[in-house]
Image (tube, rainbow, N blue to C red):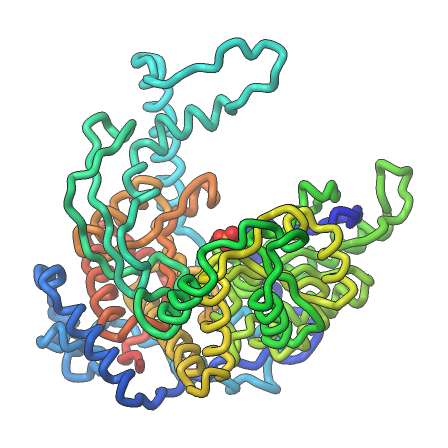
Length: 577
Ligand SMILES: Cc1ncc(COP(=O)(O)O)c(C=O)c1O
């Protein structure tokens, strides 16, 4: 890949989604929301989950009822075993026939793909007073930080004897992490000491010096896990994946202790590669423990286009072709590559793949699709966004993804034509020099992938895909009903909930932890200053009861912390699971 010296067109986040210029065909809804029938072992598993969930850790939860909610009580199908008072979320205004409108296939043949995509993607402008408050709060933190830095000498080492060298640390980054981020540092890098399943165990920490350092208290907190990328619930300490990986480790050890090009090749890795190629419906695939060198390392010239904005992408492509390479007197670029993510990990939106493919064909560009978050999580067969949009995977030149999320393992893959993969096999630095993927890690991928494909002889994989789709729709719709602002597509299991203010990210993460819910916050510089958020990641392992519990707590703290920013009308009807 090192020799792609054309324009690397990478994404910039943003919000505009256009409603015109229809190209390509209508996206079909990958995973239909149907209730999977449960066989006996699954019923046991769910029962086990429910027992786990009503463990003492959760019994301190208080439910609050308001008169409006009580009025809707009788209608609710959403109540959980956990809350015998059958509480219903009810928020006043009636939102038309929203549920009807969101039914898959309803719009097929009527709406342009853009309009349909737009309708299914939620985005709401930040209210003006919140925007002002957010900026004010942020700059206040910065001013306090600068005063702090002036008055108190930081307890950190400074660079010495580095005259003539480039500084190791950026001054602003150092300031920001010490005096702004430190205030909420306890909300990140939180150590866990369990498998990141539907629940996880946090190792409790305290700080005696305002976040400069932390020490363990020796206690642990069991939490509902809404932060890990365990989309299909394959991250589990027991079950088929764990058993087969254990057996593999006993037979083959933990490492091949060599690269693929030397003595680290193995039948298992060949099986994994051919299975990956079959899974994606491409000619060949290559697996290794790291992503191929990034765009920057490739030396490509990078141009950005607005998030999911096809008109802007077309503009960038057209300009690239018209003006050529300015560094070489306007000579044509050798190659132009469009690089996109399947599910945008910070926005929860889904790439408009059919239109991008139409554009890349029109302008003879190449397409690189990063499916880190979408593989396994999207499409009726769990094959990612190509599956979701019913697009031939061969239309994408380079399919890249990771096994760290839906497959509950480690490493990643590149899939595409045989020519591409042969090229990578001989030229990729990682393939030639990095150690081979570990046998139990590879086994976890093999077993989970075969399960998704149904090659394990069961329909567990299909049920997991349906369960994730169902959890996603339900959670997103209930959140909308609560009046919080979420971003992203209704089928995306990555659900960012906007809290805007920097200080609120910390407040929400901390409060949810006290209520035994582990989540991940994201703020500047990972997001724009004004768009601090909590990023929920849903999993097929979550039960309705767990989701209802989380929603109930979010409803409560949404009132207390002022998170209900949405000005959209809310659906008063109970949301069907
Ligand atoms: C879009 C995207 N690509 C690639 C990666 C890297 O994945 P990994 O953690 O497997 O290296 C991530 C990680 O979250 C990601 O969000």
